[in-house]
Image 1 (cartoon, protein in one colour):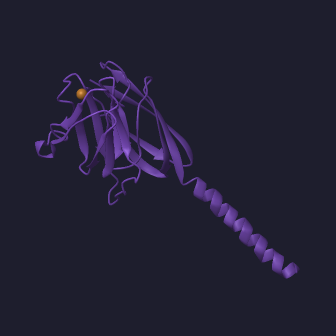
Image 2 (cartoon, rainbow, N blue to C red; image 1 turned 120 degrees about the vertical axis):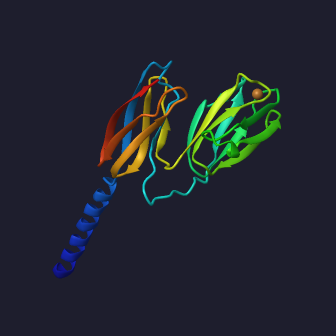
Image 3 (cartoon, rainbow, N blue to C red; image 1 turned 30 degrees about the vertical axis):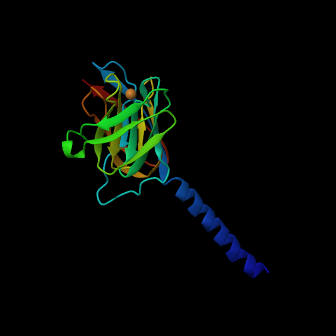
Length: 203
Ligand SMILES: [Cu+2]
């Protein structure tokens, strides 16, 4: 019996060490965006830039953009390339959704049409860039779908805070997109645990 138990103990200890190591192969990015010359630090997309040779499967779960009280909610969504977005209408009036380009490329303009309350239309965003959402019934409405190359992304809250969870260990470049500011970049290294970053977006 003695001869048998020792190798088993060694095997158990070894797999525990492997288990702990695996936990440290991913971490969270917690950050704060400050602004200079912009109205607010809210609704700024922050994402890990393209990783050479790496592509990501789009999530099976759709992202939802609602039209409620004459407003696109949320105002900004950030999605990995290939994500399908469901556009809802929760207002008692018809709304339209169209975008005149994706990041200025007018060939990628699209009009989803107009539909009543309670219905939705879906679109798969296969091209990276920014779709500025408009409604041709209500010219004051605007929203954004920001299509990025990785699934590691977030949108800032009112205070400019954001959190990107479960990023595999490594060195990355974080980038921002905002409605009226220039893109900002910041290098970040993920080990185990949380990496804290600060970014400044300027007009
Ligand atoms: Cu509308």
